[in-house]
Image: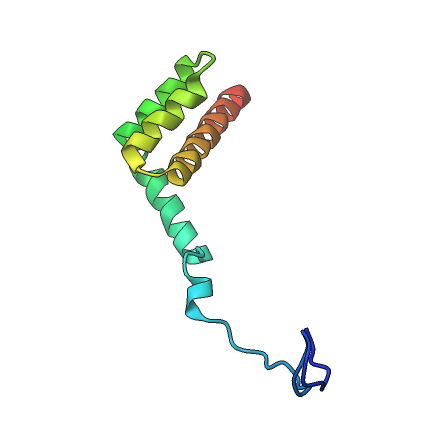
Length: 106
């Protein structure tokens, strides 16, 4: 929204060029770098799944119609928030699909 040089109205004020400000640290917060992602992948590969993640995987395997909802409710109880539960459910579903793909290859 550029100024017009007029003293009144929505675009009032002296016309100046908008300064480009550097990125604030808070806008970078929470972004995962390549290094951190690689470290997390390595650790999960070495250590495997935690007990509650194994239970989620078992819920998915035994399945049924409401397996996704049961997985979500269980994950939410363990992790605390809706967003974390949805993310964990999707993560476990990805792990299961990789397991099935590997089994289909062999």
